[in-house]
Image 1 (cartoon, rainbow, N blue to C red):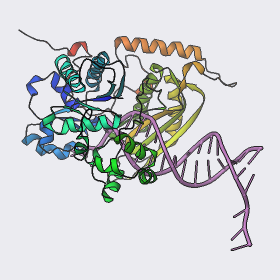
Image 2 (image 1 turned 180 degrees about the horizontal axis):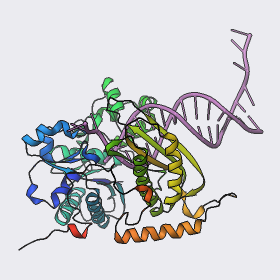
Image 3 (image 1 turned 90 degrees about the horizontal axis):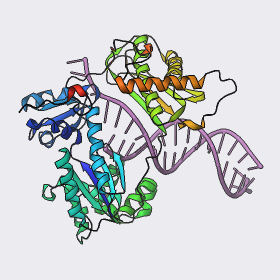
Image 4 (image 1 turned 60 degrees about the vertical axis):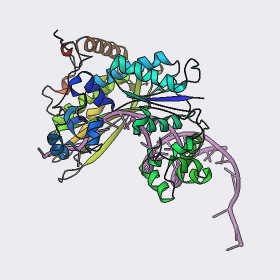
Length: 420
DNA sequence: TCTGGGGTCCTAGGACCC
DNA sequence: TCTGGGGTCCTAGGACCC
């Protein structure tokens, strides 16, 4: 078996640069929702020592001093470019697993015309030429090794973005260069545990006794050891398994004490959630609503959630809103400054196996038609063109996005004008 | 003033069954 | 001195991913 892991370099920052070629070679950072913390950095920004996850306000001095270009997250842009990258990859291998917005695994066993490295270079140049996104490619006989190879490809400029463990006798020497904490599946907890026991590199873990690892890190840990030893345990996931839960939650641009505002914000989340359910042709059987105050602020704190089991599963915005209001009103306590709320749909089932209840009085057919019409209109004329009044009109809670770039590829009005 | 959002998998332990 | 054995389902919590 042979796997390639293709990973876009600093994906969000690279996306911003595609339509701003003047930013080539300049430091770029992209901020999380609400312009909160740093979630992506160009190589130049990394070199300045801006850490991942750092709160933006703490970086202000560094940003102004070094003329760092700052962007709010533009998921319309990143999502669209991601689809295009995955489209190119799908053309290049019949067996692809889209692992995240900026990563995909490819099975490349059947590629005979090129060596693995040549093939990786081809992927790299195609995506860069056609889309302007730089990628790194790692190759190995298991997914974990492909991931590890990708780390080497990225971390050592000498490899120019491609590294393969295949047909190599000195693979172990390279595994010694990988800190155990950088391996796929090893997080902070396990990394510090392993380091305490002198397991510092990927090579050390490869040689660690499996039974001991299993007793300390469960089967997931044991699998990593096996995979480092070239025994493949983690297969490709061809069809994206249907989601088990869908969650929509946001911090507000500014906190509120007002129940009405809390309700408007959460109703907007319900709209997004219901749309997602309908798009995936799923119904929710259980709905959880949660609210919280700012966990960093000094004032009185409050975190609470309420779960409602639905007697009849649904994906209707109206029905979900009714449940949400019921839950939210019981959660609301006066006097707290609410910063965030969210909703979680669980126990999702396919829409074609709805089990109705004897005492169910809802006209499901009518609801279905209504939702279809709603989705159709909004698809044509833009999100929320038609919406429930519960969502309100002034959106006081909406998140800060002060440095948002244009939606160059998904909005007619944002398409670039080029003058010759 | 300002600190993201959305997921999965695994295990232990309790409740319950025959 | 010395409790039966074998199983399922559910939930909470931990760890991990991007």
